[in-house]
Image (cartoon, rainbow, N blue to C red; front, side):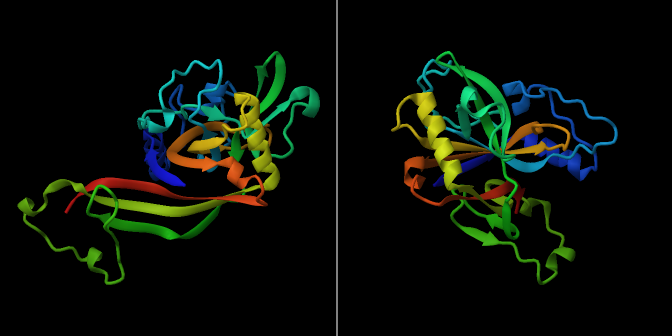
Length: 271
């Protein structure tokens, strides 16, 4: 279940670069590579185009991991600031003992890989999932919204050509009202296999030492760049925070888990 989503300022910055045809470079201390110390400030050569795209998912839980530096604040009730560049409490998609699986995950979908120590045992943790099989359904939807709860929504219809022939209005008619929005969204679907669901459950169990704590309460939809000669993604940054509440136990006996998101942006407009 998805409750709410917030766009980061870094997503807006990236979109500005792309609109201007400029190659992107993130601000210092705004990427997950820096947070997890994985190729933290990767230097590109001049032959590689620097245009990150949405392709990585991260997950978080609202229960405090034992011995973490987070306080007891209810993370689910705390909204993200647009300046935040990380989830509150990242949970790896894959967490296995290095002594049992070695230094590489089973497939290339597991990214943001690093070693962590739990109870004096070295683990391979993968904090990102590379969404190689994203399905985009439908066109980008544009709408006019007349209330802040996003209840009364009217889709923008450009078929009659009226927007190419605008009619001048008096300045007093253009009242800046915070309850009117223009938005653009697209639908994004992606899936996790049965084995991937079990890997997430195992990660929760190892971190919390409690099989009852396995709720995904937030997602980070991220952009990154993937290079053939690198073992991990670079310049991975959160573009959207998504509040959710999903009990992985409900998915334990399923052959796959489907996530559906509407990703986009809304802005206050003059009407």
